[in-house]
Length: 383
Figure 1 (tube, rainbow, N blue to C red):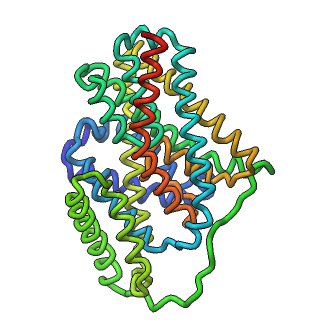
Figure 2 (figure 1 turned 45 degrees about the vertical axis):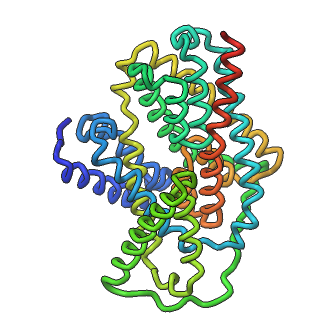
Figure 3 (figure 1 turned 90 degrees about the vertical axis):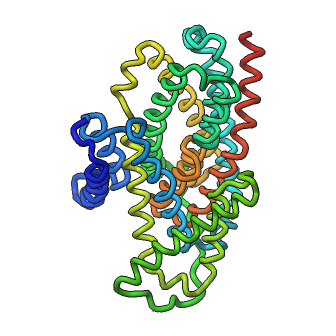
């Protein structure tokens, strides 16, 4: 890699965020949008060898995927309208359930259509199918847990190859979910619908100067510390992000929270940094080094995504669901809660922020069970 100093790497990532916002406002790039550009820039810098990938320098990227992203989610949720959540909740859960079914059927379809992948994976085929089911219903937490349960993590080569391909394909799907809603909106089968409710009272005067910056950041840091402490009291059974969401919603009910006028811009900046890091995760060079196994996994996951999309968006057309809602539900399936929040913010759908986050959290809770179910079925079918 050309740059090895962590501070310099962080500077490049932050510069990529600033450049993506600037380009997203320019005439020839506005159709792409700043979020998509941030992912592309992160991928470009990483694959050109300018900066390392998250796998090469986890000490730098891990805080971005944890502290920075969770803090950004907290700040953005300070403006969530609970009445909008009530209206959007049921349609979001329907869309999320459709996506989860699509993922499970996609794994089964890929298993039948790619006998070569079954041969390459051998005795770990059921475990790999379980891992992919879990991660594409609720995010990467299920991927790692199922890898431990099925012993795939002990096969360093296979596990690493799956991580690399998963990162590349997940980044590609985030790009797709950003691009899909404007395309679907051209069809009358996907009528746009907002779930937002109008505010009933005037907002208090916003903070100014350094306080407008310092207080939101301090609030996010304090909320994250509190959420982790509470999660510890429950023995880690309750996800930190769910506790953080509750804290944010309680804080949002305080009239003084409306004075944090920069909470959304700061939170959005954190999410763009997350997206640039996601782009850097798409290590194409590492994918090539895995040769036939990498190609087989790539094809296997491509089939999963194709079936997932066909069921989710096909049923969405029949039910005439909002295109942004469908894309955010898909992002909650494939990328988890954080990706769903990022997409809702990027699409300027504040009414879908919390429903998307809760759908992703539900996926984290249920994805492991679905993974075990599909893993058991694959073991019975191909043993």
